Each structure stands twice: as structure tokens, then as C-alpha cells.
Image (cartoon, rainbow, N blue to C red; front, side, top):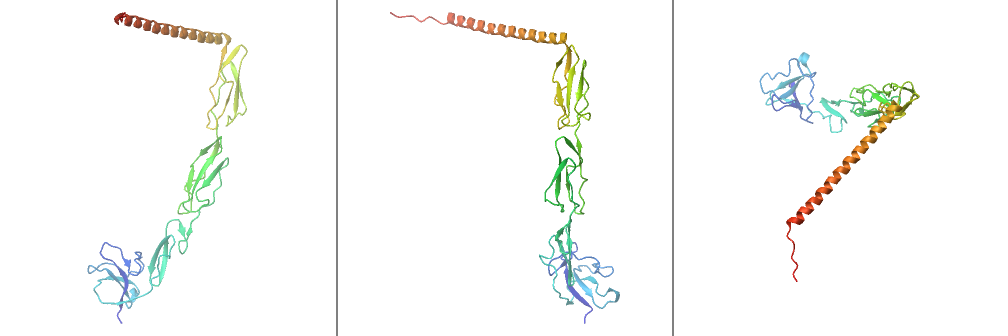
Length: 283
């Protein structure tokens, strides 16, 4: 009996990958090689033999020239198309194993890894693409009106079973502080100036308000209008008079321009009548 047998692993070139002949599996591993093997010692050693009677290397592999005559070792291929659902089947003698894709586990890579369940942030909600916490699931976070998202708006379940980011927080929206108008005061429904808070303005006696008497804090943290002005009666009258004078001036200018255009059209018509010959009337 020969101490050396072919085991059905080969490659076509030095730079190529070792391949099992039975099922074209390219995973070979390193633990089965004998010491200092494969070494391509005689060049073009593109087949693999197994030592049967070689002391400490018994049962180990060695690369050898394919032209050498040796007995083959035949065994049933263990890997097939259905061996691994989400992974690669690796072949060894009378045994196989699945190398799972990232995010999958199980002896056939049939189970997707799961991340810890997520709960919606306070004053907010979430929606997940797969309706679960499995690998590759993406969850979107949103806040209710009047609350601002602080943190990542979306997280994804990673291959390691950990979410890609921490759960965000929905913080209360606040509008910037308001100052009371000169010659007036203000009062607000909420000292925190949060969403939907309303601030009302009031002018001191002898002053008139110009602008809105109340503003509301919006969902984006912006007041619904500018701060009003408290003007004295004299200032208010001058403003009204100024507006009246301006309106009168605009009216005068409009009428003058219209009169000029009309006068110009009359002059053009008269000139045209003088330059055109008069038609003779025959009896």
C-alpha cells in the first residue's frame, strides 16, 4: 500500500486558489497542511496528497506534481446548493461547515442576528423597516410637534447585533426670550417659553400699540410675529399724517403723468392731420 493518496484538491496555476474537485469549494483552511506545506518545492505542485504513513504528519496534506501516480481517496462531497442558507459551505473529508455571512448565525446560517428591542423616545415615535430588530433593519425616529430631535434620526441593526447609534431624545422646543417693548409690558402663559406658549403685550397709558398684541411660540422655536411697538399719541398722529401726505403726493404724481400722456397723444394726432393730403370730392 502506498503511503500517499490524492484527496481531490487542485489548482491550475500558482496564483490561483486551491479548489475541491467535487464541488468547486475554494475554502481549504490551514490546519490540515503538513509542516511547511504547501511549498511548491518542485515547481508546478498543483495537486494535494495526504500522508497515510508519515509519522507526526500522518493525515496531513502536501502539495505535489499532478503527474505523479498515486491512489485516490474518494469520499462523498458534503456541500451542496442547500447546505448553507446565508453563508458558504466549506468542505473537509467526510465533514462540512458553514461560514456565515455577516449578520447570520446557526449551523446552516439560517438565523439573522437580532439587536435589542427599541422603544420610542419620550414625546416621539419610531418606525422600523422590517417591523422587528433583525440584522439590517433600519428604524426611523421622529418627534411630536413642539419637540426637537437630538441625536441620530435613524439607526440600523449591525452584523454584530448592535444598533448603529444610540436612541435619540425629543427635547422640548423653546423660543428665544422676549423683552418688553419700551413704554409697555408683556406677560407670558409659560415662563419656559415652550411650544404653544403665548405672550401678550400691553402699552402704558398714553401710548398706542403698533403691531400684534400677542405672539405664539411655534413648533420650530420661532415666534409667530415680531415684538410690537408702543408709540405715543403724537408719534402715531405724525405717522398717520405722514402716510396721508404720501398718499396725496402719489395721487398728484399719477394725475400729472396721465395728463402728460393724454396731451402728447392729442399733439401727435394734430401733426398727422397736417401732413396727410385732403381727399378731393368729385362732382
